Length: 332
Ligand SMILES: NC(=O)c1ccc[n+]([C@@H]2O[C@H](COP(=O)([O-])OP(=O)(O)OC[C@H]3O[C@@H](n4cnc5c(N)ncnc54)[C@H](O)[C@@H]3O)[C@@H](O)[C@H]2O)c1
Ligand SMILES: N[C@H](C(=O)O)[C@H](O)COP(=O)(O)O
Image 1 (cartoon, rainbow, N blue to C red):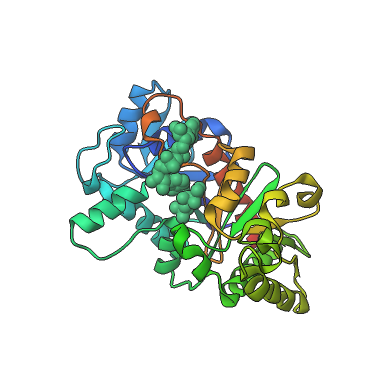
Image 2: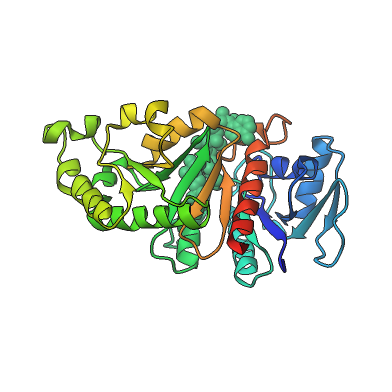
């Protein structure tokens, strides 16, 4: 295979991104990785955490070395104090993503894996600099950069896969966002990627209702009756194995999950707390529908843990492993 290297963006510099990246050489990974970030920041963090790891500048032509972290150096824009967000470093955080994106587009990297960023401070930077942009998350940022109209956020862990109809949206806006077109687009991407990227020939998808008890026959909200059920029926006519909207409070039970390949939840905090309860620190976030492979950790920047030695790097390890499995599946 031409490109065997995965790009790992080290994320918000004041958070645990550097800490968890420093564990990568110990993880017995199935492939070569390069971390994108400020090399001095990584060296300082390694010293602080007393990590016995060699940190060297990335050279594509050098041989991988035992206990060595290859770093593609991208300099910080301003001082970084551990645990303290500095909006002036937000362009640095975005540059890590842009460089990884350019690398996968150019075929230099086989996939990208992202350590956590802090959405709030990036938006603080945008508003402080009078810029108009809004940063919702990696998922939306990478969709926009790659001109992809629709992508799907799916997390996997604890023996389940949970995909989302809506991602980083205020709860107030969720109901209006759920349209037949959105359900069709998201379900089709989910179905397609479960087949092509995860080798599931006939994926079975459980659709979660939006309202309590899936609308209670229309008495507790009508979205299930007017939007979700008719769209699910249409998708079934097209050959997809997708349920009618089911009550979300009892959907995440083994007697239903054991027979399903994915849950399609209506919104972020309907699906993700269940999955994170089952697997926090060992799950993986996968963006489906992109023209390249991108996975991420299942946790955030954990500012108070940065530099403490208490950050668990298990999710980053899983994110690398899953990205690599997807690279291999793509080749076969
Ligand atoms: N992939 C990503 O970029 C990503 C994912 C989730 C959240 N975030 C962002 O992170 C920021 C902080 O979010 P939050 O506080 O809601 O969630 P968080 O995941 O940062 O923290 C939640 C709790 O889990 C703990 N925790 C998190 N990661 C851990 C790890 N690896 N090991 C041990 N404990 C860990 C934290 O200390 C905290 O108690 C927000 O800006 C959010 O948007 C980013
Ligand atoms: N929704 C994700 C989670 O809760 O883990 C997280 O915010 C990361 O999203 P992006 O990958 O879009 O940044």
